[in-house]
Length: 166
Image (cartoon, rainbow, N blue to C red; front, side, top):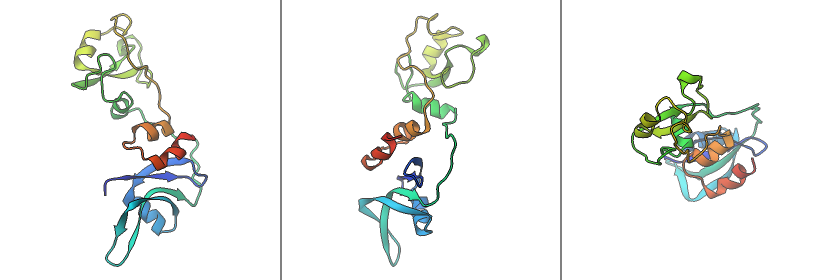
């Protein structure tokens, strides 16, 4: 089926995204309600057809104290738009520590950026300022809602009210 469904908590806060299959099962098992469907698509079985979910809301409240985005290579690439923060190329990408590890730099969201092999080699064991390199996008730690809104692939228009409110 290939698309994703926005999952809302009982209080209509964005919780996650899931597959169409999982969303359909949650609705079918009466664990969630269909908030919005895709008008021109349906799910068909041999005897019935069902609305194609776009947004579902869980009937039970799920308490999540703090949902964060894990620090992974792939998530850093997503945050930086799959391009080098120095020259904006999309070729031969690696991770670069702004403050090199040999000088006390940690593996943290604000210290890691996407860099191409050429820029990373040129920067070497220096900070961008010492290497006279300009960072086009300052690194930051994305929030979970920002991650859903900006990095989850296609953002459907009907999702926007639920993602912009958080």
